[in-house]
Image (spheres, rainbow, N blue to C red):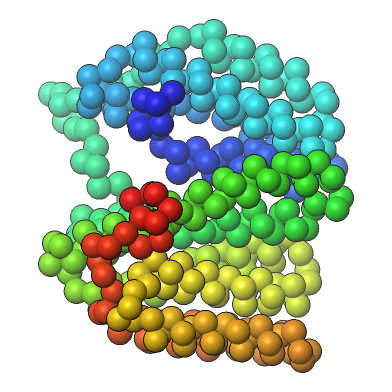
Amino acid sequence: MKLLWYLGDWWSWSFFFVALLVMPVMAQGAWNVLPVIFSLSLILTLAPDFKKYQLVGLGSKIWNEHRRSLIVLCALAAAIGALTVQLWWALPIYAVAAAWSMYRRPAPTRTGYTTSGTQPSSGFGWFPRTLTGQTIYRRQVKAWGAACLAQAIGFVLSRYKEDIPLLGFLGIFIWALSIAMLFAAFHSLRVSLREYTVLGGSRAVWSRHTAVLGLIPVLVASAFSAVLTNDGELVADIVLLSATCAPVLVTLEFLGKKNCYLFILYASLIAGIVVVYVQTPISTIAKFFLAVVFYAVWALTLPSYMRRANVHGGGMSGWLGVS
């Protein structure tokens, strides 16, 4: 399992596991067959990337052992998700699918240089082959993806915990998984800045790109909440909360003695927003306006904050043992 931990793509797998847990809760009634289909597709098809095993000289035997371990984790997550909404009929289907996936021994697709003109992946992924694309966008999309997933978990748990009591028990483990994702997001942000500046990039440019990418949690949370609820006031609350996601993560990760005064400014703004929100009833438009103002202030002062940050320090990720 330790080898699987290092070779596995746990970013995407964690998303799949959480989806297996919460999708049955979100798609009840006539739509409950959709989570079952999604779970079956993962149980039957999910497998580690064999290219990583080739790079370290491992064969299909180890790959199949790790694939079976992944199948067991998927089947357990799917079964727990089904139990939360009492989909008893789905349990034997998952058991049969998992047994079949573990019994068969598929041959992994091997990659390498050939004479047919097809070459192995260059490793650049979907992002541009530029310094900005590889050190900022490729790193930070993962970080903000983890932040979006943590927000989605919080929304689902807070909205459905009263309807499904079992979520109160499962919520402990789901929250632990989301916190681990946020720790990894801290680390991705620091690695992104470190790689970008070491290879010749400036902190001001990194700050501008980060301010743009930090809108990902806001946009995803807005769309996610608008689809699941027709309450405009609730959507505004979620937008206002998600607007603090990127500022809080970046500020905590790069906090130091030289830029602590800006941290005090951000904390004061957040405290002021909380006081206004609690003490006085404000309209939906006013909530959107507060979110825009706070994010704009943070984005404009971020270059100054990062200019005084310690790139090679441990930060929150180092303190939490992630670096």
